[in-house]
Image (cartoon, rainbow, N blue to C red):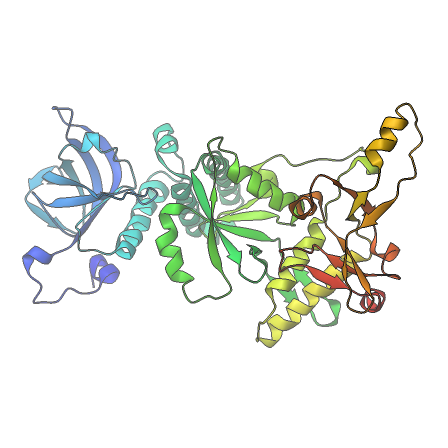
Length: 449
């Protein structure tokens, strides 16, 4: 079976010549023709390519509402001009190709092939162009033309090609690590310039789904991997939606980057600071980039504890993971979910929270005592709701970001620990519109060792 048959299935014998399919993946751009409009490219033909074929020009990493087409003016195999060829590396002249912005990885194909067929051929093309021919070294033109998703694909192909040697040859390990740093730095630069990005959310928590793997180790406890969120470029959404179509525990939400190009950065920064997210997975399974490789995060070394804003990333990480496990029927996954909740509960024993409070007469007291260094004794009200085991429950938040979502600027914040409240009140952590809110009772709080 030929490569085209493997990718696309054997063609029916009765298929007419007019229905034949072709995909040409660009592995090199040689230059422009003498007339400065036609482009000469090198690529691998899958199917049958003929002079005069009209092909769609597809850049996988770019969305195009209106298909752009071009015509193959001439074909060369081993420097000999031919009228038709199949399953081979060729040089072709593309009519007006110089105006189309064609670069390595661009796909030229007939209209009757599917998106999935084009995508598989694209990965094959990227493997030839950037892994086999260039050993993962990108030229300046490559770095300019390729999108972040293209680079993610190249890294995934490069990693798989060297995985076996990486584990046993030191020189290969050093080389692959260097490529990884180069690729990830370039992805970071391009990621923050995108117009938007899609993120997998959890319908259970209504927040980004945290992905992590966990291993239960008998009586010794649980080992949990770094947590990550999964980002998908807009141009790939029609592929990924098909994969998750029947998954009721995942949905996609669009994050706009905004006119200042700071939306994606700010979105991820909040996840790193407040939610215990430690990395992103950008499109491919092998593009796993840690927070510290993406941006500078607050460093409070040497800062007085009273000046450090309240955040609870580790607590939130395990609250996310445990909440996402709700409703899972698999026995082992249920056990893991219970372990996640237990770890969350342990964090509540020592964590600092913010209780929203409304002060009475604060502004007037400051006006009456403008020079005093003594903190005035000001009456205040806690945010209270109906309790479960006690008459009242106090509302507390894990960070200022969540508190400010539900309380206006007239509310201040009192930093508290749960043991200060739990004897007299039930406590609700992150109440409001959050499905991820959690109620703590004195009985449960005392039962956690």
